[in-house]
Image (cartoon, rainbow, N blue to C red; front, top):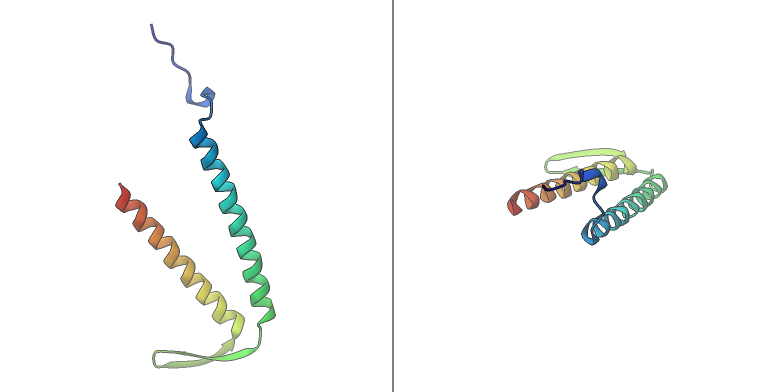
Length: 88
């Protein structure tokens, strides 16, 4: 007769510990990056002229930076999803 241990009671493996450490490191990098991004935006609040294709607009620099940051995050997230999908 084979005894089974519930998954909640199994000991953590080295891979599991490494994964949690890298997740913790990722979280710290994300938090520090967000803080630096916020400080950069706050310090750059002057009005700028933004040109995109045929459109020209005058807007606060922080608005343009937030849009650029959001687009960068969206592209990074999308590339990560595509990479994970290709691994399967």
